[in-house]
Amino acid sequence: MADINGLHHVGHVVRDLGQAMDRYRRLGFTVAAPAFPVLPRVAGGAAEPFGVANTHVYFPGDFIELVAVIDDPGDLPGEARPIPLRVPDDKLPGLTAAVRATAANITSFLQRFEGLHIVIADTPDLDGVAARLTAAGVGHGGVHAIQRPVETGAGTVMEPARYLEISGPGRPVGRVPEGRIGFAENAPVEANEDGRHADHPNGATGLVECLLCVADTALPEVEQRYGAYFGQARAGEVTRFDRAAVTVVPASALADLLPGERPPALPAFVAYTVSVRDVGGTERLLRDNDVPIARTGSGELFVPADAALGTAIIFRQDDHSNRAASSRH
Image (cartoon, rainbow, N blue to C red; front, side, top):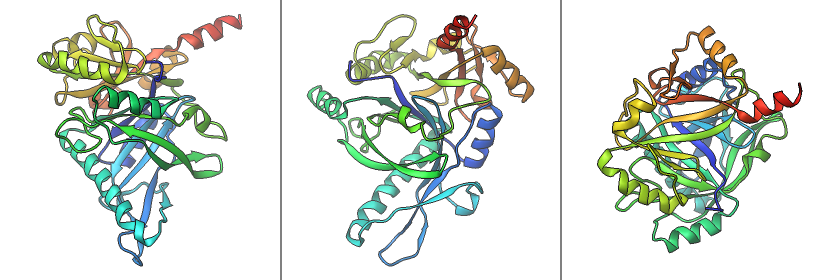
């Protein structure tokens, strides 16, 4: 599909945001200060933390989101920043309902497993995507405009974003069996200007793909469904939706791709891949930090899900970095 530019972001749902930030830093990622919404539950009431808190690992063109439900505000990391949400009193019930729905979704994800549950594709034409999905009979919640917190050199600022969530038959808005799938229109490359974190000790340069594992018997249905979302697939041992950077693998083939890994549920996003400037340097950093590592079936470096809070993380040599290095010699 010409209206898809790869991954916009993936969302790693965690139980303890502080623990997750520490783990990602040990993996060599630069993690921005987290943010959490603050608003009164009722008109005239005191503002309080409510809903979910999140933070981001930024790359020049995409990002990883770490997200957790706010059960006890005292458990939030000390560096977390409140984001006051202000709306007219007559709009407050709608906003609090939306925040509660988001928290309920994240809670339901955690009840399945801690790990990757959110995959959002990048598009330059969200309205066109919405029209295309509607014409194909794909349920979705329509286009929404929001303000999302983004860490900058001057602190946390709110930036506009537009998104759309796909809805599965008989499921709540924005839910499909494997989690939350959708599209976003804002361009993360612009969000990395103005001093945002994009340099990582492990050399990570961007999101490459995510891996969805499904029951063998469900593979035809998922291929058809994802074809409606993301267009023509490239078939093989696995099914690759190249435009969206999503790969679908039957459960029987997962061990060949990621030896030692087992899906926590079916269907489930079991891994994502990041590109790195120097995979040898990434491996040295992980070993120095006592992070368990393994090899994919094709010999690539990955951190098992058990060591990365429920999602395997594959590190792939960035060919662009190789070409850039070669051009300097």
